[in-house]
Image (cartoon, rainbow, N blue to C red; front, side, top):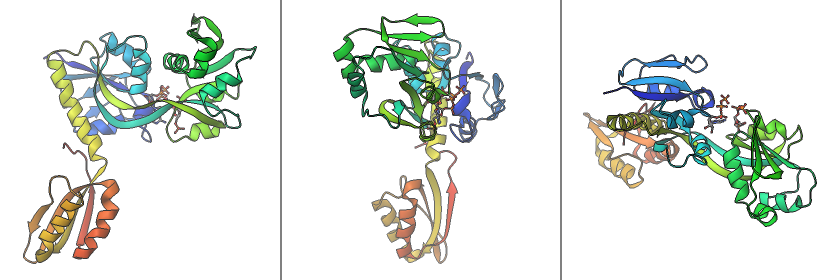
Length: 328
Ligand SMILES: Nc1ncnc2c1ncn2[C@@H]1O[C@H](COP(=O)(O)OP(=O)(O)OP(=O)(O)O)[C@@H](O)[C@H]1O
Ligand SMILES: O=P(O)(O)OC[C@H]1O[C@H](OP(=O)(O)OP(=O)(O)O)[C@H](O)[C@@H]1O
């Protein structure tokens, strides 16, 4: 088959403390060269899968590369796919969500401002003489969100807010000006902007800039997406890659736990684990002469509760391991 061309993200989605897509591929069983976080090359080698050719992509440009067939599939945040989809509808398909790189795209104002929501903001600024300035990396989603706002519609009806992306401009309502930012968006408030639309994860950037959220435009996480050039055998290949990756992200929220109980208590302990859903299909019991070793895959958040529960069976030799990959 022709090689499938895969776009791998640069930036937050390959940062050791944030997305770490590199580690995800390693955990999924791929041998990856040239994509180590902080040391990425533009051409990346997946040495144990000759059917994949990989390039580094910037999430901002990934949807364009997908639409133009420069890459067949890519890992990208849903926020950037939606930003592109405001203009090019339904051309990019989500193969599946990978549940990491979770952020929210939000509207923010200074912490001390009197507004509780965007509608209130527009009503209070109804008679303002100077334009309202909003900076964002997502001008399409921002404009769409503003045009759907009750307060905006009451005052401006169907008028289209002015948008500026470098020297390109669009829109007829110069009273609301949405201006493209290339990063460090939150700082524009200190420089005189009225609103910013930015993504937030821990909330620390907003706090540092003295901002509060007015509302959420969308939730985003990273997923595997396919462009129009992903057809035929490439679709099957894309689904196989997704399954491997999903197994690795799913594995991250599970522990592989083993413990011993006296043989007489093994069945009771196993029933206890099943009743409380502390296992995947069922616990595995390995019987020895005096003790049985019980093995379960358990969601990390249920682990402390389970640990407490198995005390009633005098569990001993409790071993907990991380799970690299879990394909359900
Ligand atoms: N703090 C974060 N934690 C996890 N994911 C994030 C974070 N910030 C942004 N993302 C996600 O990473 C993707 C890229 O984000 P963004 O456009 O901000 O670029 P970046 O990662 O900062 O890279 P660059 O420095 O090239 O702009 C988006 O899908 C976004 O939702
Ligand atoms: O809620 P937090 O955990 O603070 O994360 C959110 C911040 O992270 C990203 O910025 P990044 O640090 O990548 O810099 P940038 O703004 O220049 O893109 C994003 O644009 C937010 O500003």
